[in-house]
Length: 179
Image (cartoon, rainbow, N blue to C red):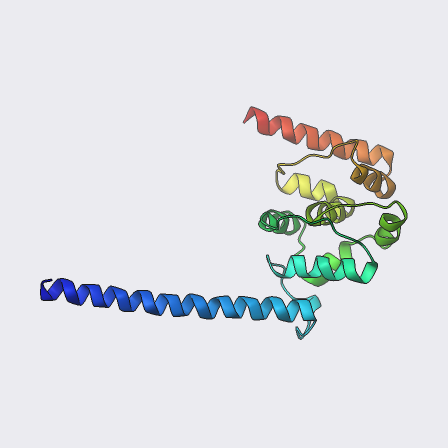
């Protein structure tokens, strides 16, 4: 190879090696962060900013503390949950904890309610401030009135407000279809 090309090859190979080491280090830092949240070693877990690692960690912790079994779900859409939480000004673990209805765990256990991370967090959001959510952003999901999660929402919102919520979601859905 001509000397200039050979030099470029070695330069790029060195850059790839540096990037690979950087990604390895970043991966270790992410694992360490996740471990510190899961083990409770984080200095102040409640002050932790919500992100794609801390949100599932908090939900798992809440479930464990409240004897609530969470259905398995791929956590690929956690950024969407974070966007929805931000729409109602929930940015930290403490703020999320504060919007959970006081009797939610008790009611969920009594009714043998079963859901995944998305249903659980969205229940909390909707019960806390569904109007704020729907006026701030458009959501790409709806509520199935035949789903057991509807019963939880009716329990906390009341039938009339639940119907208002459903109508607002349907309206938003039809707005999306016409866009």
